[in-house]
Length: 436
Image 1 (cartoon, one colour):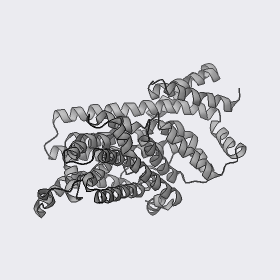
Image 2: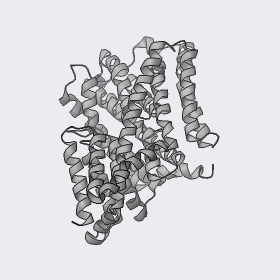
Image 3: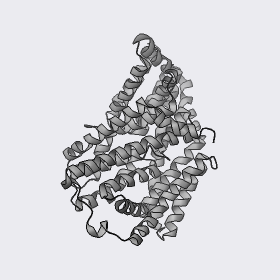
């Protein structure tokens, strides 16, 4: 059997086992370890062990529990709720404020699921109570939560930087402007549609619309703390004052001190935050460990060079055609996997190919992040669709959730095309700070 056929067999076996509903890390690790033993005998036993040692020596991985802890601390202590109230009043409406809230909360936590959890538990009941259209607001929450992983400090971009061996500071800067562009596009769509169909989004009641300046400033002071933590933490890192791990520690400590300052650092908050942070961190580590083992076998087979040969020599595709095919493969994988699993499976194969084709790996990291979020929201099997169904109240059906996402998927596709056509939208800001 040729190396190309072995690589194809490994990949197809992994996808087939994933359809059985087994845990992602178990499937990836099993296929990698089994292939190593079958190909190299007893010598292959060292590959899973070497992957574990490599993971334990991966110092930047310490950022994951710290960033996740920071996000959950802000959420569990109620500081995120105050941020939502600030966005609600200062941005002129709950739907627009929801976009602002979830972009910030998801960015602080680094995970889109965090923004969705906040949106479904805090924003959605309030939106429905005030008479907003259930289909529109369900789409708003899913779209808003998807943008958080573009804005620093994104955990997904940290993982991409580790796997692609690219500087995380450059990736964070590259994701900032595209994330804000997409958020602005969402806000424009919401405002225009609610103007055309006022019944979808009722205006703020007079008592909230006509708040005094003193009351508005009070809300601003309450919501400014998490924003200050966010800018302080990322600013120190981008300017080179702190390392990535130190920046994450600054964020986690600042969130804890903020909760203590507001007298909300209770034992229950600490316990819930630590438990959830530990659970998410362990999930990430198991997936990365399995992917390192799988990737070592794949690389040992020369699978990356085989893929380059097939696309460039046998199929005769142009670099842009290959790029489109890679993006379409993320849409397909998004039916079965979350963004982290897709990253650790495919990035070791695609990133060398992207560099060979002459594309910037920093720019490609932004394209990857946007594409997997589109995959998350695309029926019939998008990951976010079922998360929303699990969190939404009974009056919102799965059909409502399916219908809610299409306008926002179209907007994200337009944004993806814009950033693909004009790479400087992602690369301009990293270029300004390249020497810092």
